[in-house]
Length: 84
Image (cartoon, rainbow, N blue to C red; front, side, top):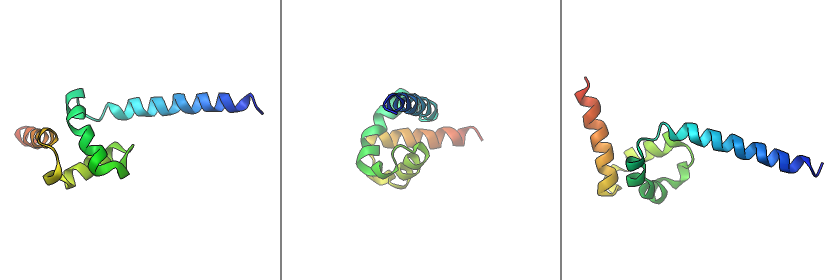
């Protein structure tokens, strides 16, 4: 039983790491994440680690965002409108 615990821990770490890598693919560029990470922790920490929940929270709190993070969301909105 004692040997099983480290093995289960290793499997859990690998599984969580894989899930985080897959989730990170849908979280924007490194620059966008850098601009919004402080706001995500400050305003939407209750939704971490759910990327969709964090994004929705940040959109709802747009008036409270830092200028850099607000620019990310403004660009995303403008960019999607141009594609129509």
